[in-house]
Image (cartoon, rainbow, N blue to C red; front, side, top):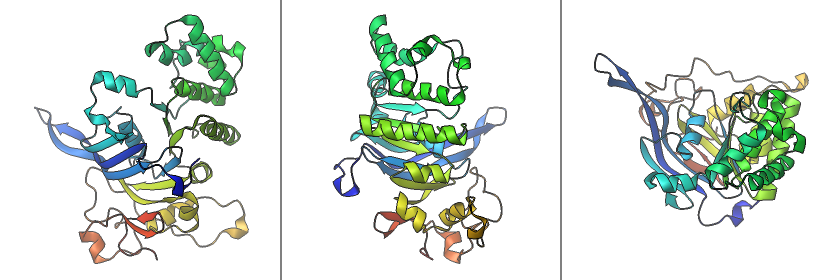
Length: 330
């Protein structure tokens, strides 16, 4: 995996001022009366061979951002570049070709697999869709993929209900690998699994990354998992990136008050190590009508008048460590 000094000149994925608002309609003529501001003006780079972790509370826009990169959702405004090309300009055929380069591992290993299809069909379907129509060739590829993710040959003819949760997620990983992608979006890929199984799947993902040179966007609310697997970590709040830094820097020295609150909320195994914690007050504001200025100011212990009036820009406060706060570090 490349170090930060060895990065290529072009990121694999570049988001430029990406916005996604979901319209809310009402009235007799179903006109738009409001919008859910799921992702709001996000600029972000993902470099080849790295794992970028994305954390935040439920509803902050993490999964929507991943779906925008895959073009499962279309952005309201902004640009999404993959290998330097704006994929929002792709026609249907070019978008179909792009699917080979970008895949996703879904959160729920139970509902993301078709219960009526065998493992051979589930893992082999992407191969068939993208031109490998010879059955023997397809099954040979499926066998190799199952071996790579730690499943056995005799399991190929079984159906999803015959597997445990961890095994089902391995099938999902095999399906994501089928077309030799460059980027895999891991959307809460281990959150539905037992802790011991989580560790197995995370180590599998790390091994596959080294073996195949994969790039991950790892979306999760589990801070410990993100710390273990990620090279860099981005923190989202109400549709915006509020802090972005190398994993070690962010966990040792968080700058933004929201990041500090998230880290302090994580349970500590040793009771003697527990100190006084900062507890966030109030609820997360509605993404339909987010606060003016800094979106975190309604819950921030360091709020000043400027925070209520102006939106803080993302600025570099330490080496490769940016945060959107007027007064950080504290």
